[in-house]
Image (cartoon, rainbow, N blue to C red; front, side, top):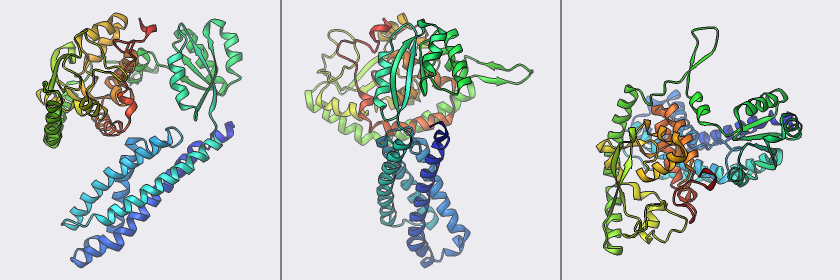
Length: 459
């Protein structure tokens, strides 16, 4: 099995190369048979003779590769087959929009998009069939890995439930507490293909990781907050002793400047493009119950500074008569109009004005209410760390987490974003936000017994 593991990435790589080759061949056929002949008829062929044709096809492949890579469409052995197909479909749509604009520029005129659409349909059909075939072959060659979970103070029921949603990839065969002692733990771990380390004391975790490293046992670790800080630290090579530098200041001045410039540009473009949708939503909300269209509420941004957030009202006018609480699953307070706009996240479109004003950023931690943030900080004092940057319309925790993700997990994702910030990361998260619009589980509310996202063992 371990020998076969070495070829896992080769299978994934080969499958993705085949997809790119098919994309190139199909686009090449439509280019040579239609668009290049159009150029010839219009006297432009000399500019793209021989090597120019290859450049056009190569540019198309780079565009498709870029979007597929961002959406995670090449991670066949890692993601669910439905996620792989969704990622590839989104990459095809956005890639062909950019490719069409490229063809219009090359041909110096509006060109017929039908041949390109036909290519996209054929590519989509191939991708669906090909990824299903490869995924089945992958599952046959690499069945779910047998794993043991080692935990510390609390039984990790939530983590086990999450891992069990991917039984195609992981198989938790048992759990054991670290209190049984290291010698016994080593004996148990050696019988499994992989180990998951959850919420262990630092000394115990270090010893187990060293043992697994020596034995070549795959190790999965739930990180602590300090682990995430170290991942974002800079390497210092001034001496013959390795050093990590963690600046702990949030974003630098130049990063804040370029981030603000990007916020202004994106919010202005977003307001213009979204204005027809916002008008329709506003009319629908008003017609339903005659109540206010917008919902304003005080939230926290950088430095725990309060500001008034603007959202489309998705609940009844009496939704908080009994106090503040997060939206629950199948919450009766959500109106029919609100249910629709919440599922597609359009209730958050007015926040574009908050971004333009400077209260928020396009990308950043989710803005929390003061009363809820205070409850989180009573149990998790480090929750305040996430306000080292402005709150965001979308963000790391919004993309990779859910509405009901625990505050501790949200905190870890937000710190990951802050410590690894770059303009490219912002662009990637903005593009990935398009993908989560199609994933309903991201809007899943908290349980009816919960007021906030805190779980019982957090209290």
